[in-house]
Amino acid sequence: MYMVTIDAEKCVGCNQCASACPAKILAMADGKAEVCGDCAECLGCQTCSISCPVGAVTVMEF
Image 1 (tube, rainbow, N blue to C red):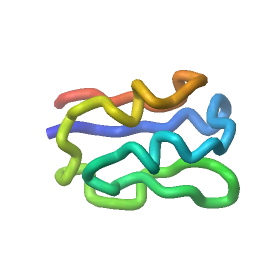
Image 2 (image 1 turned 60 degrees about the vertical axis):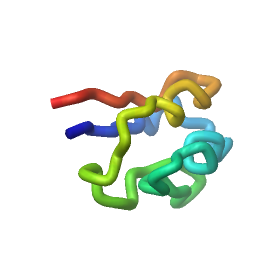
Image 3 (image 1 turned 60 degrees about the horizontal axis):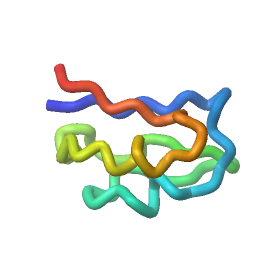
Image 4 (image 1 turned 180 degrees about the horizontal axis):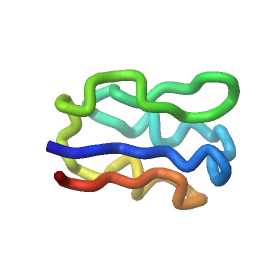
């Protein structure tokens, strides 16, 4: 199982992480990315964190 976190302080609202997520668990809200889906659906592929230009997205296995 994986946990996706978004650092709102770093997030610039570019939407790259949400667009890249194959599980579609990320979305934009109020100009920032946020986890909107069930983290149990996360594939752990790290595509969201790799696509983030400012390093605001973290994927951790637990």
